[in-house]
Length: 129
Image (cartoon, rainbow, N blue to C red; front, side):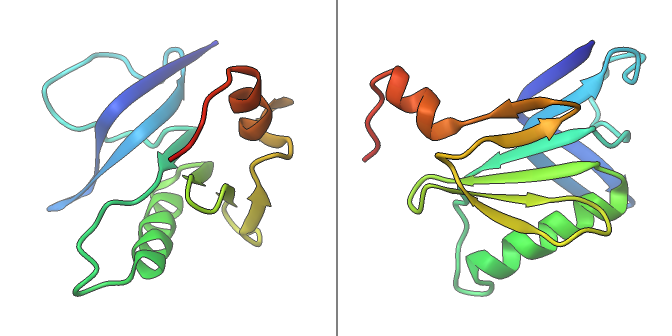
């Protein structure tokens, strides 16, 4: 069983090295207690949706690449970025080539569980701006 966490959950990677995440998925039992502090245990899966950053000092692509690499080095098993403007999904796993996939295709989250965002949004009659 899994424990989903949502809403800009904080991760404490190391001293003064914290990141937040949109959706994180843990195994039940991986989190033994909740505190006001950031989690210091890497999730199995972290999903990020779009990027809203000031691009004056860093490009969006560089930000996504650096954050993804830091998460993988911390121990996250899979990092998924969903980009609504281009309708694609980036998938990154440790020691594997990162993939860019059209969100109308099935994307394996883990252990035989997959998602197809385009299909889901079409079934729900959701329009993107």
